[in-house]
Amino acid sequence: MANLNVSNPNLQTDHAGFSSNGGRTARARIAILQVLEELGESAGAQKIADMLNASGVELQARSIRFHLQRMDQEGLTTSTARHEGRQITDTGRELLSRNSVVNKVGFISSVMDDLGYRMTFEVKSGRGNVIANIVRISEADLSRAIHYMKPVFRAGLSMGDRIAVRMPGHYFGSHEVKRGKVILSTICSVTINGIFQKAGIPVISRFGGLVEMRGGTPRRFLEVTEYRGTSTDPHKMFIMSGMTDVNKFAATGNGIIGVSFREFPSAAAEKARKLVTRLRESNLNGVLAIGHPNRPLMDIRVSDGRTAMVTIDGLNPIAALHEAGIPLHLNPLSGLEEISEYVPFGDVAPMERRSTYVE
Image (cartoon, rainbow, N blue to C red; front, side, top):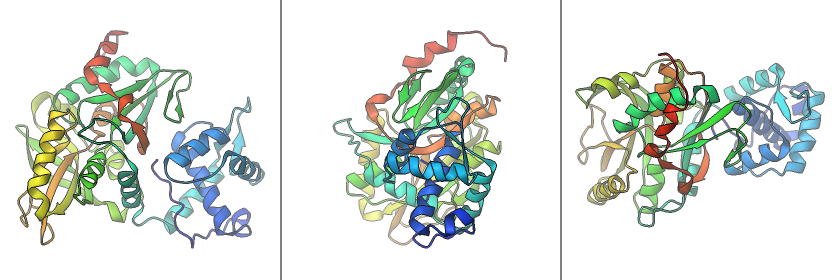
């Protein structure tokens, strides 16, 4: 789950309801507020607990209920009209904003490292869990979404060819699909980190970026953001800021796509190339390019004794939706989900014909 940071033992806040209760209480409440903010909808204590546990934060539902009662009194959260859960208030968002200044640097990289370590997928067996990105859209926009995602998957601009779709009334992991909404999930490219590490190849994720593509070939980086210097997923920022041009690339071979820049020890270069071949054979490939030992890749220098790798961002199919003007709520690095929850995109493509629309 993105934007969740409760790891700093020195966290302090000037909110009266927090400073008197100690650092542990403050961290727990910040975590709860971040879940509510990311969801963009109401949630009960058990759902919040499930999402926190999926991200490695252990809080019991009973404790969360206690915190929510106090946070209601302090104006940080509020009950919904039907008492189906809590929502974050503007006061709660203000507190999150102040907290993000304290705990900004290095947050995304720590989440990536944690999820990469905890994922269990193995290429040989084809089983285990992978790292998920999820996006919520209106059910009425589903056919349009499938329409725009189809050429992106065909162009190979994703982490393999798999997707998960959940309709209203169902769950995707701990995420409930509300009435009138649909959850789509793509596999996050950080899954490659976990796959490499389980094969004995340590990987360093340096930055997320945008690459200009010409004639189907990567030409140059246009934007880069170091993972260790931001608390916001850089690819989410690129997408929501309108900086991608994924649909154009899928149609013409020219455009701007999201990628990540990673490094691994040059001693493992041959083993890494063989592993990438196996990923490609299992339709889970997300590697755009692998460099030569100690040599720059796409004009980006690498450390001595290391080899660079550029991976395709798993959010590119989601970028296509934003470019098409489809309203969405994006939650990258949302947690771990079983690979069996994902199906080939071709299996859901017929949903494109469920309704008509005007482009």
